[in-house]
Length: 173
Image 1 (tube, rainbow, N blue to C red):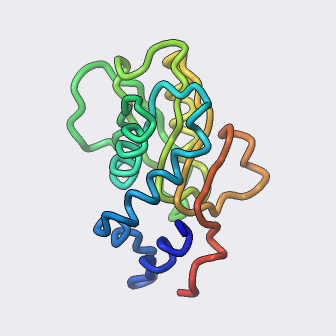
Image 2: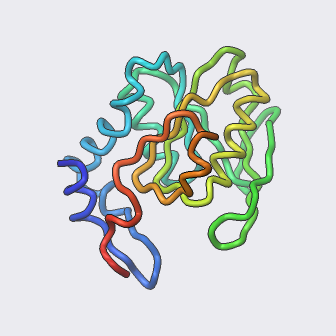
C-alpha cells in the first residue's frame, strides 16, 4: 500500500523528482512515516536524525512514531546555536559538496540513531552524517529513505538500509 501511495504522488518536474505531494496528503504522509519507522522499532534506537529539508520533515515524524527525539543535521547557511560538529560531504549526484552540521549537545555517547531522508543516491551525505554521529560517540544503526538509488557496493557503510522504493521503480522522466 505504501509503495502505491508514493508512486501515485510522485512526479518529475523539469527533470527533478518531486516528492512534496506526499507531505500534503495526511493519509499518505502517515503511512510513509509508519513504513519508514517499522524496521527500527525494536533496534534500540534512541534518536532519529535528518538532513534539512525533507529529512527534517520525515525524520521528525519518524522520531515521534518511534517515541524518541530528533537530532537535526543542518546545511552550512542555517542558524544553529551552540558548539557544532561539522563535516564536508563528498560530491553529490550534481557534483556539489555540502557542509553538514550537528549540535554537539544533540547526541550522547551510546546513542543509537537512524538517519531518515527522502533519497539516497551517492551516499555522500549519509557518510558525512555517519561520521558526525561517530564523532559524538554515538552509532548510526541504519538509514530509512523513500527512494534508494545507492550503489550496492556502498550499502554496508550505513548499517541497515531500508527503502520504500528503488529508483528503477519510479516512472520514466
